[in-house]
Length: 191
Image 1: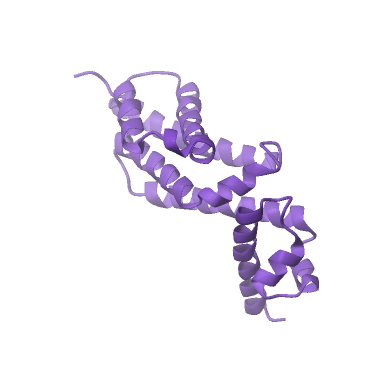
Image 2: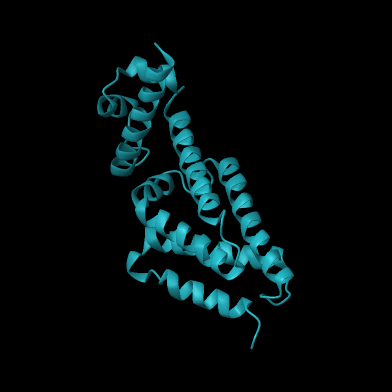
């Protein structure tokens, strides 16, 4: 198998896996179902992934890496810290809405503990991005002084709450714009 064909096959498998896991959950999904959807033999599937856990964790890591990349790309030219906070939140909220099925699949059967190391690394990276924005805002005089580490945790918890609402209670979703406005009114200096 040539490298290009291998990359395309892996991509096809991951695309199929997202659909199957989203539709049937982790427990209801078999490697055979994924192989069938990816138009690959079950044996061929095992050439790429050790098993269902390995495939699932790879899928989770790929999506979190994708979101991190989209976040960095969206923020790379944003200099205004208030705009950067708003951009960060919008990227996260829009990504969660777009990939709602995957979020359901990732949380449905395994709960929060599965892939915890991957999630912790991602959460730490995201908090560091927020903290960097907050520090720039304080240094520029646009934001008032506060404990950036703690405020980054609060903002990231709001994001996680939005995502939980999206999965558990979609009717209770708050507006990303209102969330940004609330956060920024708390961060911006008066006058």
